[in-house]
Amino acid sequence: MANGKSALDVCTPSLTPVTNAKLDNGKRDKGSLNEGVENVEYTLKPTTRAYASTARLNLQHYLWKDQTGYLLHPSIPLSGIENLKIADVGTGTGIWLLDLARTLPPTAQLDGFDIDISDCPPEQWLPRNVTMRHLDALGEIPEHLAGKYDIVQLRLFQVVVKDNDPGPLLRNMVKMLKPGGHLQWGEYDMTTHTTIKASPSLSTTALDAIPAFVQGFKKRDGRVGVQNWIPHLPHTFRTHSLTHTTSTRHATAPPYLPSQLDVYLLTYEELAAKTFDPMPGGHGDRLRELVAAAGEEGRRGVGWGMDRLVVVGRKAGGGGEDGGGSLVGEGGRDGETVVGGGWWNGGKGKRGGRRESLMRMWKRMSSS
Ligand SMILES: C[S@@+](CC[C@H](N)C(=O)[O-])C[C@H]1O[C@@H](n2cnc3c(N)ncnc32)[C@H](O)[C@@H]1O
Image (tube, rainbow, N blue to C red; front, top):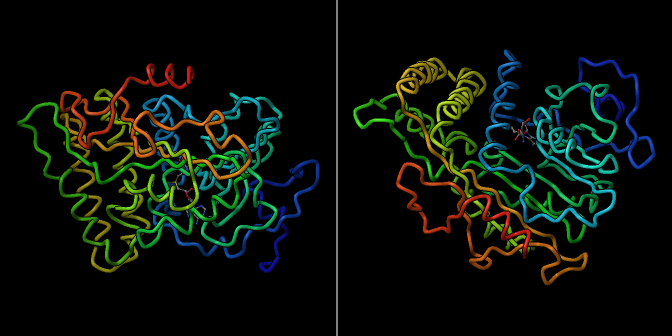
């Protein structure tokens, strides 16, 4: 490899001695994943307090799972697929993949990819059917990963997508899918951001100031600030040859708004340290002051509501083109299902999406 490391070095968390080589399809993995991974810029995850970043990602995962009710969207068929292969791109701590592995037979292969896998458990502590590898999802996807996966997941990539354009990432993910395979992409839709109060008299000054403060930097770094591409993701899936598109929105239920606010504020603290501190002008300190004040406001009973948007699409080919276990939402290809949203506005959807309970959605999908 160009940087003088072997593929095995690259695939192993830096603090961990290599004692057992990972096998891929029974062969030692010789794949040199794409180059330059160590030079990719990332706006979060400061070099200090790594434990705070990983705790934030893990809390975020469990809230996400709890508030959506699934790891894999119910429209993704699993039955009848032997030796299922799943990739989690931008895996972070690997928590989604590890949680999913517990629900699947050991014949399933689950591969996590990230520019930085030092937050994943050491290889020795991973189940035998789980691997973690370095990969730049925006770089060239190596041929040995092309057409390999039944399912690819991306989650929380809003600060990775450049220039408000998810296209390059989407093309790479589609390349990794087998014909007929499914892509699941989950994001907070920042365009649905609302401030929610337990009682009308409560102050939200700091809470309201944070998005405005960060938005002011959007021009300097296209990956910071509101991401307009997110609500258009279902349409973008269709323009990238993904069919049977399903999109589902999940709000945060009121009892979980304080925990969710903690996740958001911790994210802003990371942004302050990693992205704003290196700039002149004390912007990192200013953001930390706002975060501390917002934390106080949050304790008195205010929070941020933001939809989680989960979009699923199927790569053409592989048979079963006329349904084949995949789901097209009741509203047709443009249908959007909203689950448990609008707690704070009496259940009236903000965007005219359909609303049904998770239980009803599961029943409808399993009987279709
Ligand atoms: C907000 S975290 C989300 C982690 C995980 N998907 C989850 O939901 O818990 C974003 C992750 O993307 C990774 N990342 C950033 N740029 C990347 C790139 N170009 N290719 C692959 N991963 C990247 C970061 O290192 C980080 O672990």
